[in-house]
Length: 193
Image (cartoon, rainbow, N blue to C red; front, side, top):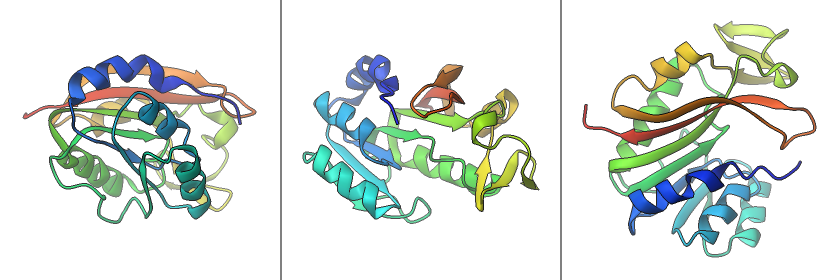
């Protein structure tokens, strides 16, 4: 894997919007984004399902609170307490109804006006499973034994149609992995409508 400094361009927005509120990072993996967030002076609570990632993140970002938990478990922060939530390529493992529920939980965790930074698998992500696999439901496949969802622009819009102000929505490619990965990078603000 290679460096993927996608968060850097959003740090001014997070710092401006966040104040002293903590950041919740969902699915921290090996801690790349956690290191960026802590390095910007933010208070971070992160979690991941994989213990190896949790251990690595704790070593790389000792100032962060890092827990081992499943995304389907209660989040480690109270409702309305986070100034920002970050979820990079972590919301794609679930059926549509469960994905909608996760996004509602993210919104509930944010304080009013809080920022949600997320990246979602794109339907153009051919190197990582967007075609040629058993269909579970539309755009949701069994890829090498692992369910994975892929998003087109309409499904991104549908996912965030209520309770969000979309600040940015871009189809992008990352070179973090050996092959290019196509994804949607979406930045949202929690709204009251």
